[in-house]
Amino acid sequence: QVQLVESGGGLVQAGGSLRLSCAASGSFFSLNTMGWYRQAPGKQRELVATISLSGSTNYADSVKGRFTISRDNARNTVYLQMNSLKPGDTAVYYCNAQIIRGGLGVDYWGKGTLVTVSS
Figure 1 (cartoon, helix red, strand yellow):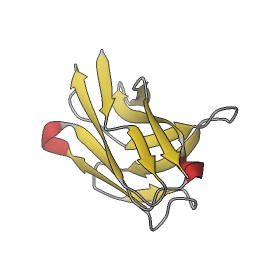
Figure 2 (cartoon, rainbow, N blue to C red):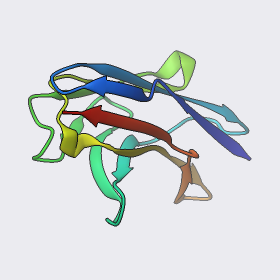
Figure 3 (cartoon, rainbow, N blue to C red):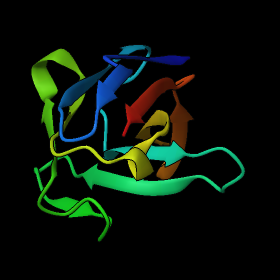
């Protein structure tokens, strides 16, 4: 099995910064695409950013220019640097990792970390 553990969430004022981390452990050869998703109260989970094994990144329009995703393949860890935070960024942030098993991509999720941005 694979475990994803997020850290780095918390309470921050608007305009502030936070850095989320997600460490993967368990039985796998390598991690494929990794990413961050978020779910605000009363809303559906949405994509924040993803990063491929080779380092290609993809961002939601709402966070472009403010958030940066990165990964350390040696540590099986993905990061999300969040700058210029807004109250609208308040959500539970979930880490996602895709692992190739038997030629198919299998998604794994962390339990989430809460980010609260006060105005």
